[in-house]
Length: 98
Image 1 (tube, rainbow, N blue to C red):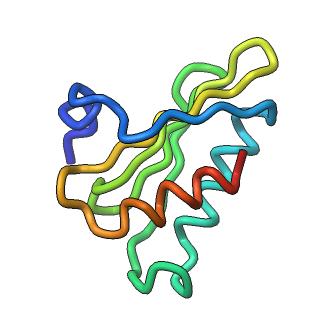
Image 2 (cartoon, helix red, strand yellow):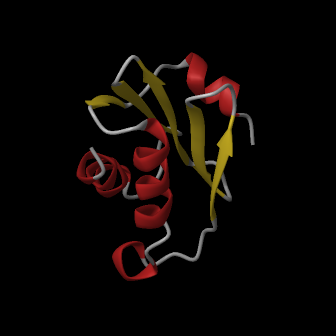
């Protein structure tokens, strides 16, 4: 899985939130892992980079979100590989976490 290659194409959506980055990232991780919603069994992972920076991604790396907190605001860049299934639903779940 090459996240940087997907990043270079730019995000599918960019969101902002006033919630802490860790809380937003955890919410995305939990919601993307909801088998009832998506019907797949992809595992969802969350990694922390620098303080206040998280990446949430699925096993195949078809979707991922970079969550960055700065000065009381959180930015979420949602990426999806071209042709990825249910991209709109994954993006909608990100929006519910803001």
